[in-house]
Length: 283
Image 1 (cartoon, rainbow, N blue to C red):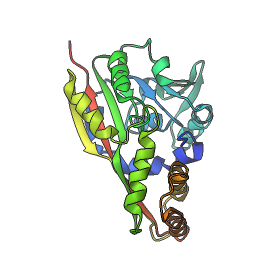
Image 2 (tube, rainbow, N blue to C red):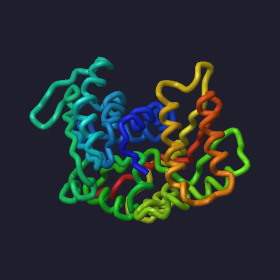
Image 3 (cartoon, rainbow, N blue to C red):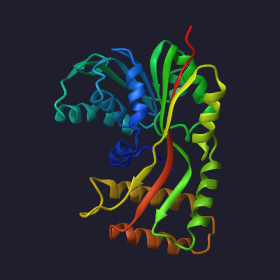
């Protein structure tokens, strides 16, 4: 299952925006210095850069890393255009671009490797990322790159909840098999939210804030908002790819029913997730 598709990542931006916990973000903003150094692991199309700017982070340095060359290209080439359309002042600089006085660079590569020699950052971000990688290594990297008292922000961390509405007779079998298929991938953890929480609580430092950040995608009067039908179509493809060879009785009917409901704007989807904010120990 590839999560590096530009359209999917851009289609889910509005889904993420609704899901993100305001309470956790308020704690984050209250603790950030005026011009932070930010490292973003699995940065995707640069959506977090835009969110930080919209929340008032208009100075400092931001560096995002993602394995997907296509999404990094989008972040470099298209994110500045999107930011300009919001009224932001964007200028080209030697290393990338700046939004007001917030300098932004993007790099293709493995975030763990690229951040292995970094230190002194004010904020480490890993959005919708902890369930895709070994959690212990993620926490270790976060602790390494942050200054004493620095912040690690883990929003949209999946935690073993996949719901489609209306009900279908094989929903339980599909959810169970889908989660098992996720867990068979090296480094992935379908219960990442609870395990990340326990790991942060066991470390020195402080789990500053935690809240639910469930994805909820449902049809409105005129169908799905923005491009969220494409987001749901991709979710169904993730499930199909994961379970194609599992031999679940009734799965073909389940998939056909869900696709028909999506086409008719009748399908609702919920995924259970957490936002977590951790602060490293003060000196």
